[in-house]
Length: 175
Image (tube, rainbow, N blue to C red; front, side, top):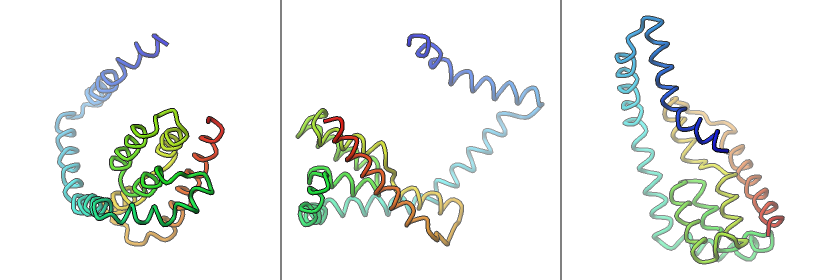
């Protein structure tokens, strides 16, 4: 185990030196290429920024308005039957939009129920086996200028549901 830790400390510097070394061997202007890449990265960030701000505002409005709590209370009888406690449902819903907001909700579950409770296990596994659907789709589709999403959203929602079901099964086995 110590060997892996030792190796991992040197991985990033080795990658950087490898890239610079290959650039020098191929007689490329590494710094100029880096600056050009940084310029393109800033352009991409500026293109995507309105979408990201819209998603963040939407998640904020959803949770601050009380609609999220209202919605969770309405669907709690069904979700409890399938093994998803009401305390975890806000994280499941918000996870589709924002990973950081969902992480905050999971930390609240940890504080209230404990990280080693069923709710804690379910939250942690769910965070690891699902994706921020709308964030990822908006980011990649805006960057690549894709206008027709076809079956992407449906596929993403099915995979999200599969991740949540897998989380319920795994948390049930562990607790």
